[in-house]
Image (cartoon, rainbow, N blue to C red; front, side, top):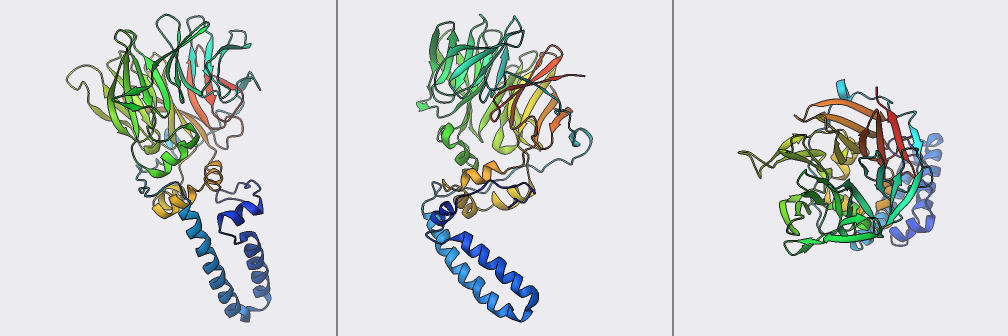
Length: 404
């Protein structure tokens, strides 16, 4: 069986569908309908018979539907409203520039979501096994420090310490042989999904809590509920104080300071946009649009320190998903069922993209793997020398592409 995008669906145990629909064996119903359709191809007069069958099936399915909604973890999700998708032309035209990437540390770096580089050219990443891994300049991968939890965002501090957003533990300061927890809450509200960060020249850490309601094991529910539970925060190392800069974000994600550090850009994944937060000047403390109507959902964002930002676009937006599925609360509640939600999210379009944007918010270039063949679920892009390094939640290696 294939999905609406023509991809083959994963096999599903019949019992899982039976349980979802309150004891109704959907697979048997579907097979019966197929047989009925085959009969109709020869005996069109049996149309009335099929109508009766469809009515019976509808009644059975309705009973199952109500059972699923009753057990849904979402009570009252809102319809999602996103900016329009861009035309697939110009900068946004499809390409396969991410095909042919070099794969580093295959099997040694599970889920390397974010990447950071130190002054020696060594690359750090947080992995799903709780380790901060380091890629040496010769390509060797070493287990540098075990932090536990789920390290997501990483950045190099002023003294070469590794600063980590751990989705479970909060904001961490990691040095050789030591893990220090810097922040776990702000304004009396604990973080549920500490996500991404960047560090200013004065040591100030800007970071996001993607959601104060859903943790990393249930982040998909945040996407479906369409309510703003994310925050942009600032940690002052001189006082140890954490301040909320912006609240009510729709899954606040990647953070990147500008070259002059007069503003920062943060991603709102569930809105397919990036926003600008002014740090100095007349606009200090204000938020304005940086770039929206993106072709995918932005994850991490990195500045190459030369005026270009690399925005990782995980998955791809689709008309069916946004105009049909995400517009109706009842469909969202249905999809949120534990046995169904993974089927939906695992079958989103697999296109991976890195969008290069100027500090004025102008799209400059797009690197794409149109089918996720080599770079699947890209979550970060980091320019180091003549190479672009790519992180991903779905691979066990770091990808590297030589820039033209």
